[in-house]
Length: 97
Image (cartoon, rainbow, N blue to C red):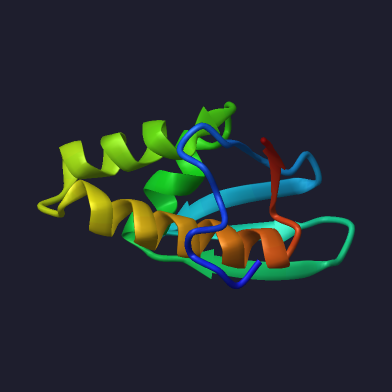
């Protein structure tokens, strides 16, 4: 899942059930309970994490970030895809095509 273009706009993403999280100083710390591993995401990653607590499409997430930050939609979508691919590599999210 290294390709930033791996996900279609309509791909549905949701946080994995075995993950819990908390916000500390504006960053989210995520615990993958099965793996016993902690992960930390920045402010934008925190917004993505909050959004995917319920199933969201890549398009939904990208539009929410564009509404919040000064970024072009296409660039945002590439960046969000990259973050989601990293989260997927750590089993923090699930995808439904």
